[in-house]
Length: 358
Image (tube, rainbow, N blue to C red):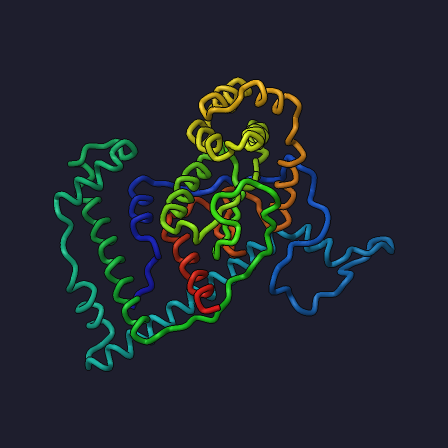
């Protein structure tokens, strides 16, 4: 059987709207290079020398190298895990399909035709119209011009969903257990704003940028995650304004000023609805919208009260490999970019299943 992407709906929409990216990428930072201990990776490379080099007799330690190389190392480990996980998923699906086909006395190809293709219904006119209405502001073409493409995409979506459901039924019947572990990072929550109980079984630490449009989309997904899982998840927001977003650092400071008044999340929501309005006068207007004491807010912002706090978040983000936004660590497992809720749910469900066993 073919291994299909987890979120077919997201891929369909992306193909139709030609969405080319889902994250803000930065180079460098508004804060100085991180110092202190290296990123704490649960599974470190074995056999690396320490020191790793000497220059003029002065040692370059392994800890120093790990801090400098954090972003690249984290990405490489994540890519290695994903490559292995995808291959493992294909192997599992192939073996289960071959076993089921053999039991029925048919070929795997015939099994797919019977259980996937044979159980698909053509997209209805109502489904096509609903898909179009939800996206017409972005499609910007009459329904008649794009109807055939929408039908094709809905067919692929339905096939993907049916394929995934059948694969899952085979896995459930076979009691599949996966032991390949994702790379984990020990990421500090610091004393940053939190939504949800601190002792929730799933801890999500988010690094984000108020001027990044993809972070705004991700914020909506995070809220959907909180609504879906309730007290089972906790979300901590940490600042990672990128240098290419010139007003983002100031916006992060403003959000911390709002936090001083106990209204971080209200201000957070207003900022993400106004990513093009980040001048000081805009930040003050947003403070009024969020219900803040404006004079206290203005005093906090003009005094640069939270510059060091924002810079500390940036430095901590660098230590765990952050280089773009948004980025999430779900019980230490990295998930980057404005991903659909299905991608969050896949990790969260695995983590909740682990917690239930312990």
